[in-house]
Length: 332
Image (cartoon, rainbow, N blue to C red; front, side, top):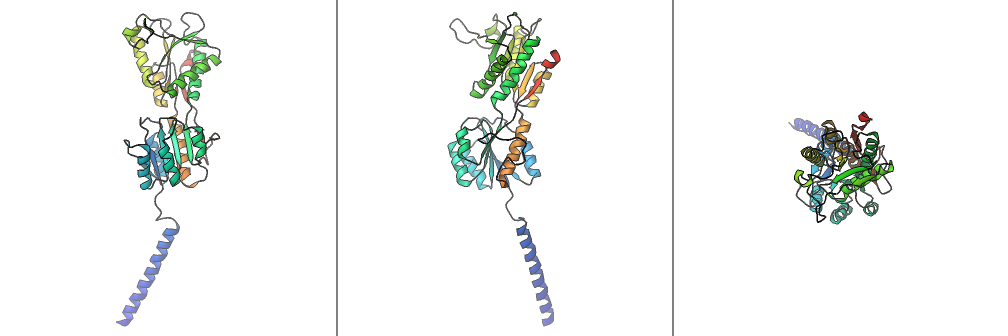
């Protein structure tokens, strides 16, 4: 009986030793380490600066959890909750040109890298925190791309010079008058002039010099522009419908629309449906890809841009070019 007990004790000791070795091995390969986690902070406007589904798939393929913050919470409390849940990197969707100071303080205190999409932080903010990165597009890039197409279209006749004065008579419609949209239109017109096409803004005013409403009734009897310039896909569709009601799409010199769209699909649809003659677009697919890689690299690499063909500017901003869909080449 004692012999059996001794054999069992030895067997138990061997099993325990093997188990301990297995546990030590699992510890050595990081089996019990917390799963790498990246969090996402929504902007107040919840604009689609990145494709969240594509990000989630990309992180999942790389063994990383992807947590979404409470959409209704402010940046700092939402970030704090994500950090408490294990987030080691935060992707921040930003509508404004200045980051929430409380969010920056929180990130600094925990050493959390921030990858900002949407509006770019100020250069000083970028330089003051070495774990702050930005990926997005400058409105100058989108405006200039569209402006070149406008100039080429006017010179080729695809945008008719209805009154033969060699000046592009245009109307600008911005449902969002924020600085981003104003910059898009400004750079489009500047680039158009750079290519030798000067323009004149048609302002629709009443007898008191107040703007007329952009309705069929409000613009009835007003001069037809040669081009509508706008900076969202919805504005393009609105203007096309309005032009139809006014009869401005008829005849030998129909009004044309040049637009900026929020993503490639919207831009392609505008051109395919004959709404816009050209549409530059925010390249959400490429921005999503770069933002995902920056966030992933920030988990364990000293330089978040490692492995990217694109290089940041001196302050750490990665600018992605706008894309373009156009029919103008077909008309030349």
